[in-house]
Amino acid sequence: MTPLWSGWNRPPLLVLVGTAGPLNLGVSARLCANFAIPELRLVAPRCRRDDPQALQMAVHAAAWLERAREFPDLCSALADCGRVAAASARLQPEPLPLATPQELAPWLARGGSRPTALVFGREDHGLQNSELLLAGKVLRLPTDPGYASMNLASAIAAVLASLSVVPLAQTPATASSVPMPSGPTTPQQLCSSGDLSAALSDAGDLLLEVGFGLAWQSSRHCSAAPNSARRSWLCCGEWCVSCAGESAAGQCPTTCLTRLQGSIMVES
Image (cartoon, rainbow, N blue to C red; front, side, top):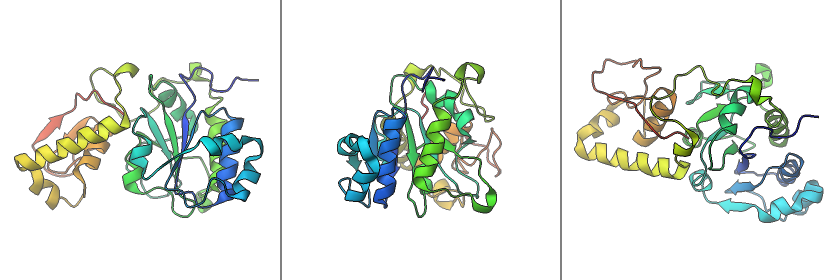
């Protein structure tokens, strides 16, 4: 039998956002035990960890519920993490590169010394775009487009079962058709999600202060400069100022001349 998480620096954390069902919460804790997940984090949960149904479904994994830390928002939950993948079943285009578990595994497994994380959203409407943009990749399970949405606990089980046994030696180190920014990218140089969010917030404030505010306010593509910066830096390494990050592989959809070339040393 293939060992779990063979070739990984460490197994990823499991982060659940807005979980409403105590049954799902309990099964998720049991899955953490099944797949040697080191920590369960809960973001604004809508059910209690000590709900009898959650404890019943956790069976012998109640310790994961007891140790689970709660956070008011996803940004706080990911503050110390390096690489982050968020799951989504939406059929419309996503704001970040899509990856299957097999494509995602080598990228997430070699995330350096910081914790990595898998994020799953609410049972009723998943993750918001602003939450997806806190990840480096969007994870999508191959399901029938006629009914793509899975039960939360079932989706977690399928993802963990797939990721934990991917033969990394036979998979490219970076599974993405989208070019990454140039410059040093060794795992030790990756900053935390919290540091990246703070840096992008500061960058947004600075650019507004020096006069780029009108470009962002008038853009029909973007409503928040830091999120657009995150998306463009992660996807293509070029930040197009006048379209506020809507460039793809260096090609801006609008006529713009001012562009900051990406030699970015951070990655989430």
